[in-house]
Picture 1: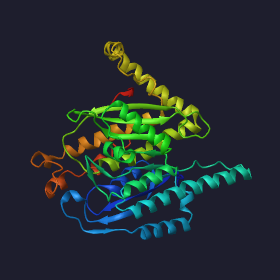
Picture 2: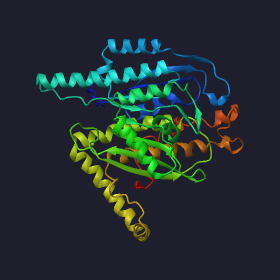
Picture 3: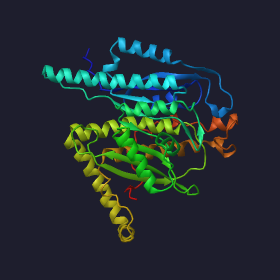
Picture 4: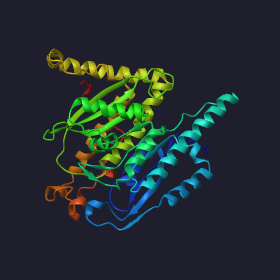
Length: 390
């Protein structure tokens, strides 16, 4: 009998995702887990609430986990050494101030424990290949469009967590950014001031304002990113590079899109930061590919570009090669594709998606993640990155 060929054993990355859980529907950990697994992440999930369904259905059944219950589960993970193995931590919806404080404590412990271990190995000089320190993506789920999803005493706790450091990237929407900084966003200058608070006061190297409008009537949305030149590497000169993507505003209300965004960002930002920090040749190849695509695009749009530059339109040259810009562009491309796949559900021809309290509307308007499994690994960047200027 011929000897069977040994199968290759792919390496995977590991993430701890601390968010809400619903039995039916797609929000929180239910939204994050599958995409991360498709992308090669071993996803450990720690739930902050366990509910029958999300609030869009009108009624919910289940329970919030107390801060003590959340911490006890983490103690179990720490006992088996998982806190030293995670490549990333994703933190999302936590309904209470005590719970939020505990989740911040958990994520900070993972980051600081790995930092300490790295220092000890460096001092020991054992020659081992050192694992990169875990990144922490903090999605401060507070509310949207003036409506709070959490108790308002959560807000100062988030500010405290951010000031304590350790967060790699924060992903507030416009309302959440305004609440956390105390600055109402009405102008481009306000956007810069908000980003400055996150960078300087809260010490976060990468910031994404996930969705914002300066004109409430506009039919497009901006995602604004800001990344420090150092990419979070201590000792470098830190100069914020601010850029944005503009894309169509979809009329339907689909729950869980922010959670999908954050999960995809874990994968893409980890990938591009690793390339930029540890594999200059790898990142150079990515840049070369982007430059080639940009050259083809520029040929097709040369006349429009010339007119835009003549009018002082912000260009994209300075933003194109920032790891966060690559990550955000790919994430937006996938999220928008998944939304379009969701809206292709034949049932939505007779039922409008996302009508609060309408059970059939909510059921048929749930994110179609399983049906979108072919879209999740996508690397296309369908929107133009531009330098953000006041």
